[in-house]
Image (cartoon, rainbow, N blue to C red):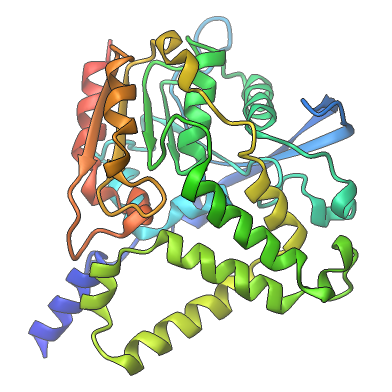
Length: 356
């Protein structure tokens, strides 16, 4: 029996020891950005940016925070996703790479996500059509309100990974170190654009969506969309090992899709998927000078290494180190970015080489 328990822990990648309740240590707040103008020309009189923090800010003589670390979430996520044991328990504790007695961790909810302003607040499809440039600008203005002019480190996963490339070109000195994970610095096209399009159209083609004016969530459309999202994020080898029978596989995916649907709003999801439409840092990569460790995984369905895009892009950024995590029965496909044990040492090395 003890051997079976050990195997289950190994497959899940969760330490057997008791886990810390990181949510109980959070401080949360909102920054209101007034008369926020989007690249589309649309405006909001008040744009709310919600954030959570761990640790205590340290300030210089001018009042600027000197120990801030910002972690940026992926499409459909929120800052709270970085409280999961496989991420937080590996990073935030005493003596760990992002020890909260040393660092001030900022976990924002980006535009259209979490507790920040989003279509489901009431505007529905009249909400401004934001893109990644808008999201990065809102992050910048939020940080300024918190007294942060330069980050000690910025980390980002998936969409947050792409935000780092936008940051690095628009504001070259915004951080002393950057760690983007699970993305490519190129236009969202080809297969990546197609599955996003299919997910959004799955919602739009549900009659219950009603051009965004639904009374109840368009469940069939959401089921189509989240099923595509689940496929995009998974590692087939890990699932084959963890769920080797038909019954186990079906029970797992039925429960996972049902739980995912319950967490979504249809209009919010369409906007989230569409926000990548103008992303394309590829032409200006030479402008990036922030020291960077960029991490992808070999089993990432969304950013396959066979494209060859990453290696060519990395050669154009002298300050960047590109790392590809090998696929295994324990990696999590696109979601490997949230399992810190696979890249924790890379983070330690990045902090060491950018320390003063």
